[in-house]
Length: 405
Image 1 (cartoon, one colour):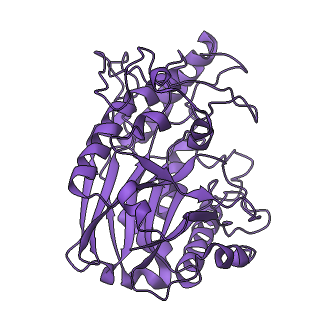
Image 2 (image 1 turned 90 degrees about the horizontal axis):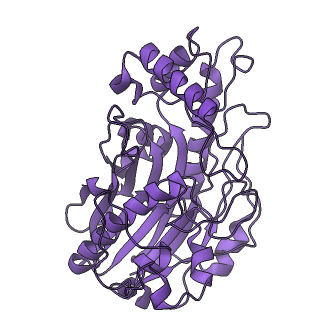
């Protein structure tokens, strides 16, 4: 297994290998696609191969163009969840087990055992991280879809000893975490979870225990000044503003259930950004936003059109009893001048990355953007994977930039 070496020239052209200065820091955001330990995976395989479960999908699928699944599909998914929870030892225990659709396995794929299939995934992640550290000089990793610090340290491999790590505790399998070079901060580093993003997903279901992933901030001292890195993984399935690629375009105020959930994360996300900006003007907000912020940024939306009620997005964003806000756009709401954010543009010339498009972003505060001698750029790097690998190493490519301080 080897990672493609095709992005090296892109790094040179973008200045991403110019790390002679002590204050040049490589940063990567990397969604690890349900990364757990081999023990976690073995438990997943045990539960999903139970006779009543048989690798069923707990998600109710929508028909093309539909706002909601059919009642028949809802009933099927509900029964699958009941069977899955029972095989797991109850709903609470079931939340710590990856769902049966996580790795796209079927009874046919796991004939003869599934453990080796998962080892290939972990090896691919380890090789990808090795390339990012050894060749791209990445010193800070923001990970999404990871279960434990143990997994992070495993995929750091030979580099684990030079990194510190932390994780946002969460009751479900997926959460967010960091790894950073121990010598990077001149003062003790601090990791602070942001639980306000971990909202209940199904408000009307009193029996549901599931909440969304929390956020996590890493507070460092670089060149004598505070630097905060904010890691997010927001609600999925409301990604597009513009219809394309088989995905419908939607505003955050659409009646689609996924968009309604993402909408309820807007107010806590905006409040978190404002609190961090007041304390640490140099900050980076990055991760899997599950929203095409690039599409939103290209729309010249008048200030009075950002919210349904026409109020200024720089003003107070009032939520209703369910947490819904009037925001139609995520980018225009969080980068409203109070504070302003700046997207690190993606170099689209690099090839070899087959991960999701437009979901992973790196955003800078105005103070940090002003420190950059030129327009900052980022690249996406391919993930190491063997031909014919049955469990993909990741369905996201790491997004990488180098920032000057």
